Length: 438
Image (cartoon, rainbow, N blue to C red; front, top):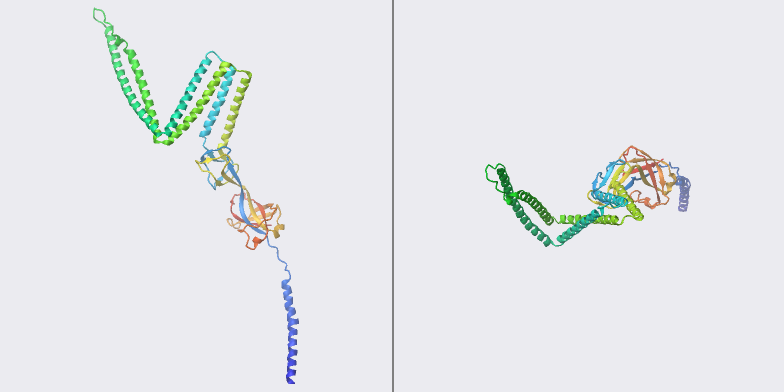
C-alpha cells in the first residue's frame, strides 16, 4: 500500500516537471527560434565588380605590299598622331614611277608628233631608231639566253671563261704589237721632221734630194698607229671586264640570278622601245586620222591616270599613326615582306579606355546606362578614376571562371561595359581593375 502511494507521488512530480519544461522553457525556446527564423532587415551592400582595362585597338595596314625597310617603333612605345611608324622599301616603287613617267612622256611625244605631221627625213630617222631598238632587243634576248644556258650548264660557263682568257691573251699581244707599230711610226715621223728641217736650210749648190715616200706618209702612219693602240686598249679592257663578269658569275651563283633578272628587265624595256619606235614609224608613214588622234589622246590620259594612281600609292609606303596611342602589337620586322591589306602594327587608343565587368542577374536592376562608376586598380592604390556605364549586354552569359567563385559560376551574369576617364594616361590595357557602382 505504501509502495502504491509512493509511485503515485512520483508520477505527480514527473507530470509537474514535464508541464514546466514544455510550457515554460519550451515557450521561451520557441520564441527564440521564431526570432531567429524571422527575416532581418539588412543594410544594402555596394555593387562592386572586377574586370580588365581595355583600349580601342586599331590594326594598321597598307594597301600596297613590299619589303619593310624600317620599323621605327616597338611594342609598348607611345606615339603621336601623324608620327611615322613604318616605311616600305621604295626602290622598286621608284622604278615603277620612272617607268610610268616615261610612258606618259612617250605617249605625249607620239601624240605631239602625230599632230605636227611628218617632216622630211623624219621617216628615215624613225626607221633607223626602230632598227636600233630591234637590235638592242635582240641583243638583250641573246644575253638572257646565254645567261640561262650558263645557269643550266656550268660547263658552258667554264668554256666561256676559257675562251675569254684566251682572247684576253690575244688582245694583249695585239696591244703590244700596236704599241710597237706606234713606236716605229713615231721614229719615222721624227726622221721626217729632221729631213724637212735639213732641206729647209739646204746649203749646197746642187738640187735638194726628194723625200722618200715612206717618210712622207709617216704622219698618217703615226696617227693610224695611235688609233690602233686606242682600239686595242678598249678591246682589251672590254674583254677583261667580260672575263671578270664571267668569273664573278661562277664564284657567286646569286649574281647569275640577279643578272638574269636584270636581263629580263632589259628585254621588257627594249621591247617597249621597239613598240614605241614601230608606232612612230607607222604614224609618220600613214599620217594621223581623227580616230587615231583620239586614241593617242586616250593613251596619254590613261598613262597620266596610271601615273597619278601610282603616285597616290606612294603615300601608302609609309604608315603613320592615325591618333595618339600605344603600340600593342608588331606583326612584321624590317626586311620582311608585307602583304597588301595585312596588319603590320596594332595601335591602342588610350583616349577610349573601357572596363568590361560581369554583374549577377539578381543585381542587374541596380545598373543603368550612364550610371557613375568609380574605378580603382592595384597599380594606383588609393586613387579612383571616374567612369560611367556605356553599355549593358542584352543577353545573359555565365561569368568567366577567373572572376566568379565556384558557387557563382552557377549563376547567370550580364556583361557591363564601363567607359573610363584617364586624362593623364596612367592606365594601361590589360590592367585588372575594380568598379564600384554608385
